[in-house]
Amino acid sequence: MTITNTHLGPAELLSTVPTGLFIGGQWRPAEDGATFAVHNPATGGVIADVSDAGIADAQDAVDAAAAAQTDWAATSPRQRADILRRAYDLLLERADDLALIMTSEMGKPLAEAKAEVNYAAEFFRWFSEEAPRIDGSYGQTPDGNTRVLVMRRPVGPCLLITPWNFPMAMGTRKIGPAIAAGCTMVFKPAPQTPLSSLALAALLTEAGLPDGVLNVIPTTRAEQIIEPIMTGGVLRKMSFTGSTEVGRILLAQAARTVMRTSMELGGNAPFIVFDDADLDTAVDAAFAAKMRNMGEACTAANRIFAQRSVAEQFTSRLADRMAGLIVGDGTEDGVQVGPLIDQPSLNKVSRLVEDALSKGARIVAQGQVPDTGGYFYPPTVLTDIAADSELLHTEIFGPVAAVRTFDTEAEVLTAANDTDWGLVGYVVTNDLNRALRVSEALEVGMVGLNTGIVSNPAAPFGGVKQSGLGREGGRVGIDEFLEYRYLAIPSG
Ligand code: ADP
Image 1 (tube, rainbow, N blue to C red):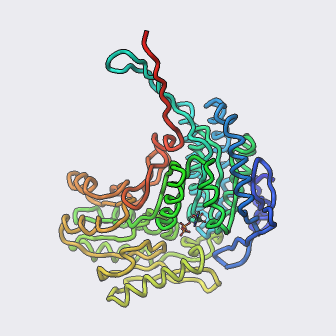
Image 2 (image 1 turned 30 degrees about the vertical axis):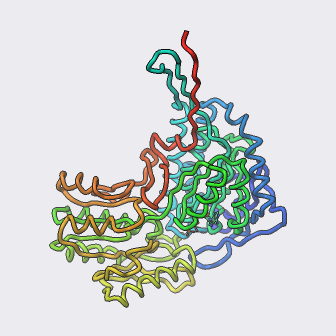
């Protein structure tokens, strides 16, 4: 049951992806035989039926992770690094097939899916390099009476929960450091996009990951099955990427057993164009920050602020770029924007735009969508947006650029920080002092300075305020999966 770069067509390729639960190294059906359908958002058609984990399956996955933990923690850093490195190589070798699987279940254009496979693979390469560098320290208490030996230990069996928008990279961003640190895992992918995760599990097995280290439980019953395992006392760590709303529920559950958590939650990113900006850079960066993944990213530029003297030119150039985009089935040549993930997402984006229009917003540009039954929304640029428009206060998660005008730096900073979220902000300016001043004043975990992309495995990704807790990637990414243990040793 392995995926190879086959150059098969979508239907044949999808039939090679495992559709069972992956527990203790075995592919198996759900205990009650339940399955659920996976849809292609470009057509609405069913592309696979996947086993739907229930409570007993989730408990089996926890048991398998717990049983594997001691032996896995005892492996050498080099063994774990080598598995990650092999998985990195396999991901790149099979990037074409994995991209097609991803596009089929998630909708993003093939070029973006392939870019995600590469990005996902980089987490494995990065953490393969981090595994041998887990270190500790040796010191003395100030009075000289005690030696202090500090070691790092894996935190223990982990629960990983990921969203549908980056089905492969959100998995590797958690699985990579967990493997490197010596933790075993129960992994629950999003029900919209389980196939990328199941293909990833098969690939990791091929790369040499021992049975039980990674257990994958796709499910439509997250609410019922996750709480018992969150509160069962065996799992020691939870890493979640998803909405702030669900994050709050999981944090409350984690509190019951004082479980460690890493939370990557929602965003409401400001994108600020100052009047000294290079407008080519501003348009490129805004386009990237808005349109990556059809706008379905927590890092998406949600509120675009342009300084008055450049606002018109910036907006019309962004509008030209957006209006000309080709929207359609992401597997087709030339398509630049795919469908949204499902009908509720399409309804939400439509509703947010209607709300803004009813409060006085103006459509500067709007693209075309195909009439093929998928969940398509046209790339849209709005201006004259009233302050009480809902899209300024919630994640749009769609290809809609909302541009507002501002006069002063102080005014835009107040507006940019006027949100409960603090994941990322973008600043476009050629004034170095302003760039640093504004970056310091923004209440965010990340700043894109003259760029619209901040995600990188080598950098600490994460937010402040209600955007989350902890960081993924960078030198600190592995810390989320390690505990400190210190030995007090009398001197003498
Ligand atoms: P989105 O709106 O992007 O789908 P969610 O926060 O709803 O974001 O979902 C992110 C992940 O959290 C998905 O894997 C989803 O299945 C899971 N999830 C949703 N509700 C719960 C819950 N009550 N307990 C555990 N996981 C959940």
